[in-house]
Amino acid sequence: MVAWSPGYQAPPHTYDTWGILAIVSGQDHHELWHRPPKMDNAKDPEANDTELFSTLVLNPGDMIAFTHSTTHRVSPQGDSPTVALGLYGAPRMDR
Image 1 (cartoon, rainbow, N blue to C red):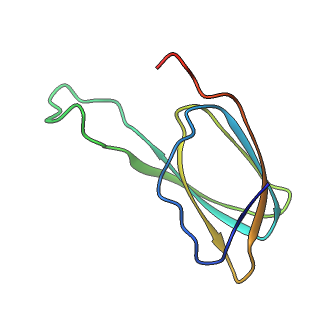
Image 2 (spheres, rainbow, N blue to C red):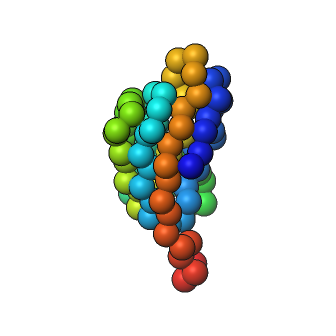
């Protein structure tokens, strides 16, 4: 179980594993980010070029699933904490 206080905002992050998050109470805003395919003329192949591609508002009973490469940012909405149940796999060791 995890709880986020009103006003909290996580930076974009990934868990390097699969995960499932279910909202128990409160409301949660998720931003989903991805790394677009590299262009042949990319100036800096090591640059952090993730970009926002979707936003979701999750309510009690809603769930979201992640893969090892999902990058997201979470922030609770409203005046009460958001409580969620998370289930995560083991981090990938082949990297």
